[in-house]
Length: 153
Image 1 (spheres, rainbow, N blue to C red):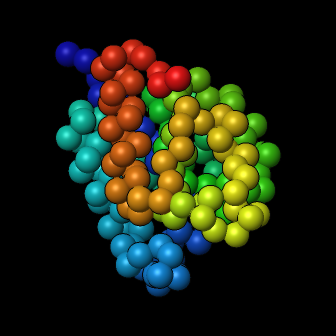
Image 2 (image 1 turned 30 degrees about the horizontal axis):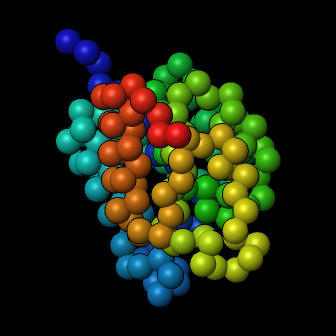
């Protein structure tokens, strides 16, 4: 019997305020709703998802470092740290498994400062603009990667 693939799902600053914060951009779904959806979707793919959120960059870095050897993949919505954190990029480059970057909104349709992502330098791919379903899309991409053994070019 094979062990379920473990996926660490990290959410950055202010995502704990989903449902209240700028619903015209981020929608009405709460982080608790996203977490429940991610955990259920992961189970459907035969994965285990562990979801965490922090407003603190250093805590996210520590979780990424601790994921080495314990998780098979990371799905990360670094929120505002996407555009500022070399520290998160450096931690993610140490991780041996695939990293998928997720954004609820399409960062390329927003303010110019949001167009650059440091996280992308360590990510297999980015899913942006599809709201909470983006997390399920990330799990689907990981499932496909693990079933086929092929990364998308």
